[in-house]
Length: 343
Image 1 (cartoon, rainbow, N blue to C red):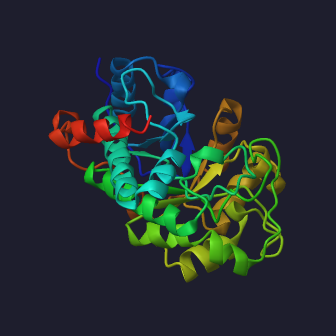
Image 2: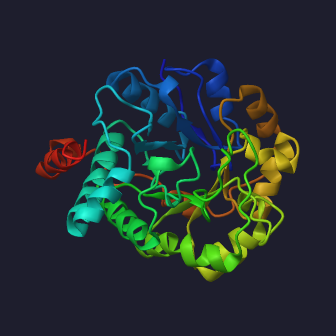
């Protein structure tokens, strides 16, 4: 029997299902008024056909539909493999840029187009990409996920990748604001700190965001990093970073996602309820809680009375282009070939 879609406005919480198909617990959580989006991981993928069925079921639950995203950057952070183009680490685009800038831009555009075409064909709205952190050689969790160590190069490549995503009908999410590349600790496992001044961070780490925003960046994810010479709170909990710098100084008007609140770098705000409310109070529009079903249950209850502050920002994250499968286009085949040449 076909289920009727629940008519519910989107809430502020992004959840993850537990496996390759929805359980009754997954469905119940996704039908909660506080739910607003879904992020998928490798455990949610078995085959293109299975992924298509999973995203169709998630989309059929509610109206408006839950946002559907995935960390699909390329290199070691590519959640879907079999049946998808194997994308190189983004640092390969930077190496190509060093040899020939025009070729680097073209390859970044191609990577964005392939990501958008393949994810959209399987029902996804967006990928949490590009990484705008700089490759200082200090952070193992960033490393070759970064486009370049030079802010001008990183900004130019990010703008080209965003243009490719847009051509494929997909919005872009820049991360991890204002920059995770200088801090050595992994925020999944610790609370990293970056002792640089605001002036130094503005000079080095913010230019890629300026270029990305100019290119139409639709969303930003702040870092679970503390910059003590700017604010005592991690960036994702900081009104200084999110309101004064990102929105005020950089003029960003899009959606702000928190990074995963289950990460060690997010624990400074207290329990899971406090983390979510602190992030939302600082300026995040939506918060992610991953790999923690029990925590999701608690957080759904805690956020039951919280409405999505700016639904139009969330609307910008939806894929465009209708049912057209761009994988059948000449542009897609050419972009695939460009990406393959980087391997």
